[in-house]
Length: 240
Length: 272
Image (cartoon, rainbow over all chains, first blue to last red):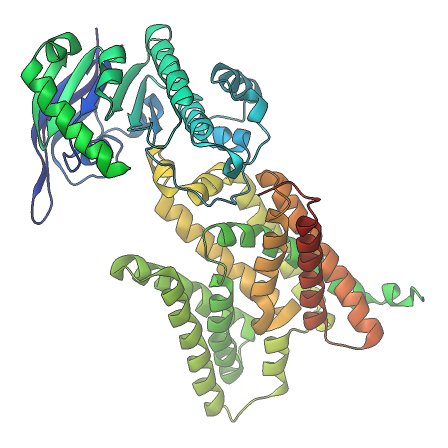
């Protein structure tokens, strides 16, 4: 198995604190990694660095063996679903307009139709995005991330503010993408139960990496699970 | 009603230039409005006032100096805004007042207001020359081609800068490009409605079109249609009744906006 992502000695310093301190881990192709950790643990800093939004770091980040500071080609291998996509509520864009933005090549309407059908939002294609519910919006942004056939999908705590039914649908979509389409998934989440159900690897981050390994190992270590479920509960409460 | 006015060559030039400017302003304006930069056109127009005064003082064709001054000051203010983290509305206020202030000082050097200054402040579409018309058509064509070629990058970085960056779009360069195109558009359009009313052409047709709840391309087409309608009808009405074209054009587009609001309040438009 190829290394989809290889992070070595990643350190990010802010004037007063180290947001990330010597973080190293590898994600193999086809892995489904759940990243957990409390607020301020450095999850966003980690993602920003991986996505090229933060370039002030020490260490290296590689996608499929290519250092992202040296090669710009990595952009096309990655689909990214932000936590709370920010946009003007009256932005004149329909669902298909938004998905089309993700498309790098010439407009391919068949591809857009296909992806909208796969995510159960085809009937919404001509609706303005400002009219959608949280769950529908989430699927639109997953569609936008997937329309280029990325090899890696990065999702930032994407279930905040979404109803239970949509969360279930979202989980089944992720599972299918990983198992059938072999897309490598990196997902930061508060929901330990969901991570247990879906991910085959877990990384516990709190500025440094406390644990990284198979989820079975993580979930069989009661002390670790207790520590992180408390941390994520607190954060969850904080969010509501 | 006599159609005689449509046979005058100055009217042909006015209508052709007016339609080109209407299309240009609504397209460039859509990106500015969606970026919450609605007043940026106004600020560039005011800074061009300094450029016009400079041209009149130096004896150079004032629109050339206006292009130079507006584009340079718009790019500088954008750079300053990013560097010193000044908010968008404050940077617009700085740009707006510095242009007018510089213009006033330069004008007082040249011995006070002249008729030329008034035509730039309030527009003089019925006076555009053949050369002006050719320049307006060429710049409109060039900017529309750039927008068509970079459509996805422009739309995506307007929709969400961060996500556009993650997709590998050079967002900073695209931002400067939009400012540059806005600078050219504003100065080109001064001949139609003048410095004082320019932002109306950028903002009103777009705000109206957005209310119809359609996708991006349809919104752009609606906005262009409203804009062209206001300009063409405005020029004709103003000539027939001998009133100012600039004011008539802007009032007509406000009329379309008001009508749209009425239709929307009556529940005849989709929600949003």
